[in-house]
Length: 100
Image 1 (tube, one colour):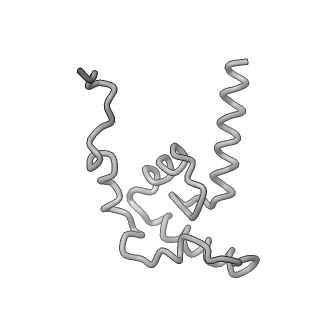
Image 2: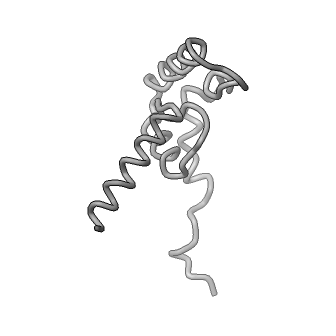
């Protein structure tokens, strides 16, 4: 028999916050870069996406989810791909320092 305390929670309970996201009805292209996008165009798109995130009531849930699953693409919770990578690396270093 399965130990219920080790089973994942109901999916709806874990993801319900997404229904309140400010980005819910917006075009995905605002949050995910098209192939080959670079420079000023990419910076403008990221800043526009972050502006949406900054007014979002579930920004922190979104951010923590993206960090927890190590989401590699797009703007999530007001963080770009590079910003999330930096936070994940910083957390990893902090864990190693505490453990070491």
